[in-house]
Image 1 (cartoon, rainbow, N blue to C red):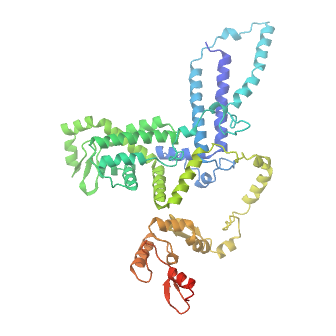
Image 2 (image 1 turned 120 degrees about the vertical axis):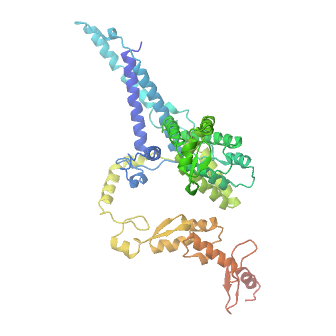
Image 3 (image 1 turned 90 degrees about the vertical axis):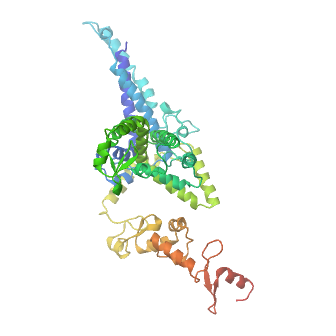
Amino acid sequence: MKTYEDARATLEELELIENAVTSRLRRNPEIFYRNIDEVDLVEHSGRFDHIPSSQKSANKVYTVKKSRRSRKQILAQEHEIKSFLSQYLKDCQSLGRVEFDMSEYRVDNGSVNKLLEHIERIKEIHPKDDEFGDQYAMFSSSTPSNKNIISRKAQNLDINSYFTRDEQYGEYLDLEPFHQKWLSVVKNGDVTLLQFLSEVEKFTDQRYLLQPAVNRNSSRYREFVASLHHYLSDYAARAYPLLSWDLIHAKAQELYHTNVAKPIPSGESGVFCIPCDKRFKTDTVYNAHLPGKRHVGNLHKNSSFLTQEHSLHIFCRYLSRELARTREFVERKLAFTTEERTQELERLTDIYDSPVYGRQEQEDAQEDENKETEDKEDSVLDSSMNLPLGPDGFPIPYWLYKLQGLDIEYPCELCGNFVYNGRRQFDKHFGEQRHVFGLRRLGIEPSASFKGVTKIDDAKQLWSHLRSTSSGRVSSEGKLEVEVEDEDGNVMSKKVYDELKKQGLL
């Protein structure tokens, strides 16, 4: 039988867990923000719309302002919090089964000795509580030689056991193994990884039903859907451990029964029946086939597969941002040289092999010591009449801001629709890595001819024009050669010019 002492200890552990979770959210607000964004995506309730995006990007909760933690630290703390919440749930369930023995704590009239005995027992509780509370504190698992952000309660947590190196702690999806499976499904070895990603992206909307790449009734396709669904559902639970994925699975099941009972509009082709995998020209014909044996039989026979396929559609929609980042990463890798690809692989490996909390990191000790000074500085900045920021990030007078043209925005499609403030910054960016990379992604070799070009279509037309005209010679490697003019006005390639100059013929 559980005593009052056991119940008291359980209640105090619940309070310690609440404080531990709160302290991590206050120190690392991104845990809060990234999960509410995902909750909005799942629920479409808009209950967090009142939080401005500027506050999210500033990584602030109330008045707390700290440096951002790495993605590895964020996921480690989220899985740590998940273990805390599991313990919290167990404690709540144990409290619900408590049956107290009142006789142990009953004090008869005049029994002063027994009352004093109870008081002494209460006084002995505090040292245990301090030791108990340290188990949930951040950095409590640290040693003199190794500082660790994780608590002593979760010291055995290894975040690398949850993710592969290519997944980078929930930043990318590791879909290359599924690309190999897809080749056997479509029976075509020429399908590239980017083309395969386009097929996976069809599951974010209804295109996987209306524009399937293969017969949806084939056994290979159904095996592929099952394996991809298993991976994405497992990945989602690892990438967002604080979300209730059991509820999301239940919601996917509920939405399936709603969607399978109604037709899908398929443009001029009429409507589409999901169980029968067939188009009908009019709603009348569709409604007439519903009571038929074929439709009822297809619905019963394919129910398990259709449920899994619809659930895959739900998870692809929830993980659409991860899918987009994966596509961008694959496109970047295709543009890499061999050396750049090796450097990127080494960078990802270093991140994966590095400790959760490196020796060079500091937990803002100096910031805490100078808190009063920072508060004064913040108050001065806050009272600066909301002055605009110059290129160096510091406030400047509004007249100077306007004089330099910083209030004029210049978007650039080649830089991923990045917006530059002011003509000076805009002109400067044409030689920067972001713009050069945008040109090379289109197969264009950067040159001075492309200065001022910001549209993708314009860049493609100019590149096609330069390749077709004789004014810009194209080398056998496909790169645009730079032309120069000597003192006599003779035009030649820079390579020829350098050779003649070396021989003293100029």
